[in-house]
Image (cartoon, rainbow, N blue to C red; front, top):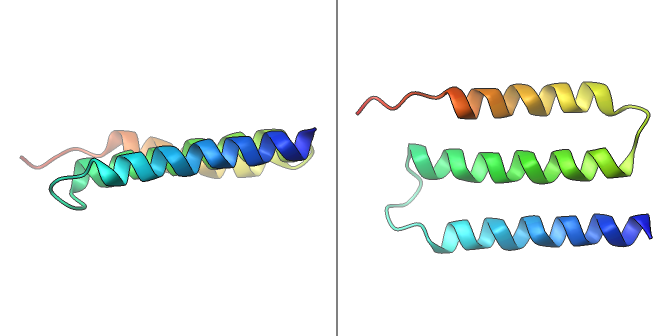
Length: 77
C-alpha cells in the first residue's frame, strides 16, 4: 500500500510539473523557475514524509531551506 501511495504522489508531481512547463510562454524566467522549484520541493517533501519516518528531519530541513529561498527571491523589476 505504501509503495502505491509513493507512486501516486510521484505521478501527481510529474503531471503538475508537466502542466507548469506546458503553460510557460516566456521560457525559464525568474517566476517560472520559482514555480518549478516549489513543485519539485513539494513533491520531494511529500515523498520523503511517506517513505521514511526515521531520518526525515535533516531532509525536511534541507528542503525547507530551498523552499524558503525560492519564496524569498525578490524580482529586480
